[in-house]
Image (cartoon, rainbow, N blue to C red; front, top):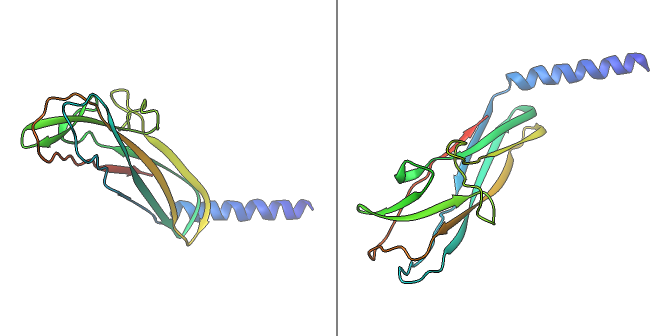
Length: 157
């Protein structure tokens, strides 16, 4: 019995050594966060969601941890993200939670980010999805037209 225990520890240590040498590749994709038509005369917020998908694959993985961060976009600041139509801004925000209280960013300026991971995966990719909750606040005095912004997803592992 004592011998079996030592053998199990040796196998676990061998796998741990292999995992640290295994090539880890993570990638991300996202659906478009589309808000539809905005009425500047309405005081109602427009809410919608998008899905961020993270896919990681390694030859052998024992314990993989990663973070999912979002850039500030056109505005360059997390306090108020801005979609642009030319130079005209339309304020919006992206949150991690349905209550829209935790701004999804990079950890600076009181923003939060996703910390996640997985345990023991052999040869098959691990795919996880996260919901991004978007909001445009009502009563913004903006001209008619198409507004857009691009956020970059940063995966660190």
